[in-house]
Length: 77
Image (cartoon, rainbow, N blue to C red; front, side, top):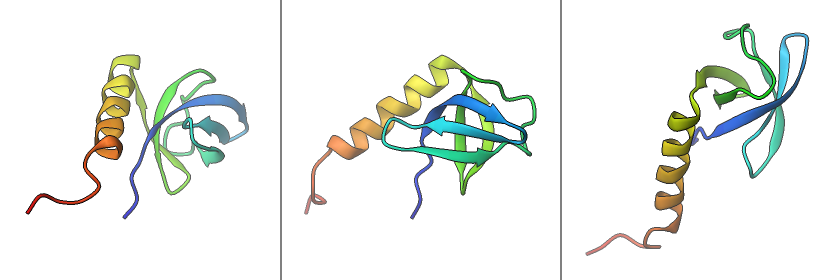
């Protein structure tokens, strides 16, 4: 299962943008969102920018992911 995480666009080269998710930095296609700019918060999947997020949306998603990762290591019985 893949979990999309919000990231910040660091730079752009043509139709590609470099996105930092805090855990990794990778190049993603911006063909689906050609209006994306350096500094934008984005949600990516399979190296494609899916949507541009507001800072509030990105923070909410980051909080939810942190809660999932910091939760119990096993399911309750």
